[in-house]
Length: 74
Image (tube, rainbow, N blue to C red; front, top):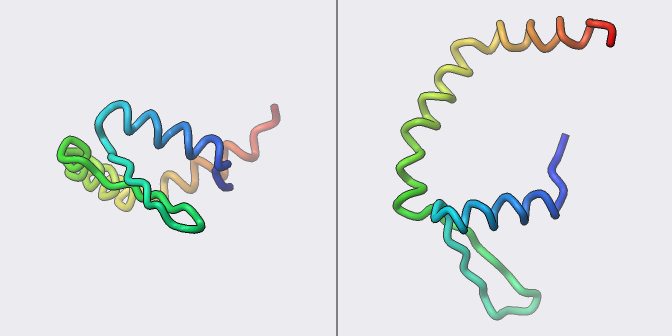
């Protein structure tokens, strides 16, 4: 499963508008753009670490739930 360029661009623009990331354009050929977390964006690192820890601790149960969900007739 991936993400389309359109959805990625929309997501990055939204995060830029929220002040979570900053976009830097480079006048190169081919054109290049980089994104970086802002100070506000960096405040999300702690909560994201906690979510990753939770996911690792519950991985087996999460995978079992996905498997069970996939077996349900719809």
